[in-house]
Length: 328
Image 1 (cartoon, rainbow, N blue to C red):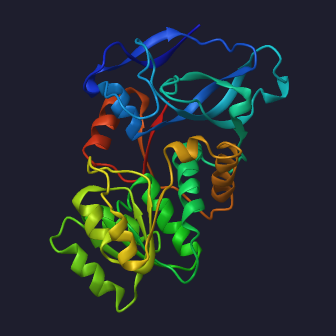
Image 2 (cartoon, one colour; image 1 turned 90 degrees about the horizontal axis):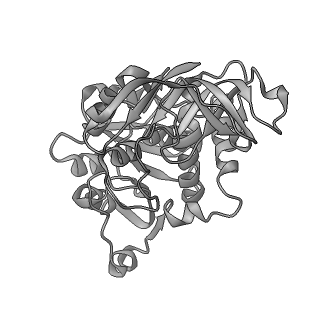
């Protein structure tokens, strides 16, 4: 029996991703095989594909099939796995570069979350990875109805969820997105103010939009000069929650920056999330529960499995809205 999967034989540009016929994987002891309906694509996947070193994970050995997150139906089980899993709709996080870009993938039974019939596979795959990270960020933010929140990259996978979570908390939300289409998509999420950061002078326009309010929370996924400009908008007692630096440079802060306005800075991911008490299973469960309750509904942009390279290019050039998902 064979199936199709994306294979990578060398590190390099998106074109190194090739769709091939491969032997169907066989689940080992404690594993199941999932007939994949949707596979998540992450910015980390593009770094791994290119061969970029850094971060807590080593580069995988080649050849390999990329992909960290899958949703679909269990079609085979390994030894010591309850047969009741057969036919179940599930979602799972597989770990780094662990075979998700495929029609069939194996997963440890302990990583599975069963899905209700009404939960869409592309939404579930967004929440098992991007959603769980969002929950870790929100855990550090402690949002309340008194907060005034700034969300950059609000049309991205995490940004869209943060906008919804802040609105659910009753906060006043200012969102930044790049380009008219993304601005329109974020407006649909309920942000109070949505501004195009590609238009010069966005920091001053944020100040005007606040209408005399003081910014209390800045979710920093950008870093660099843009991140610093957003940080400088925080009012006295505000807090910055850092979880990325898409600009390529981390947000540079000094003790003086924090003391001057009694600010708080927190790194929500990295070593903290890896060493989090209780691990990440409860974050996954919380994200999926929020999806099932329709409290957080991820934006997704889908590509066919065969177009994995195009999905990577679109993600790298910021040409996507929401979480990028491959449909097998």
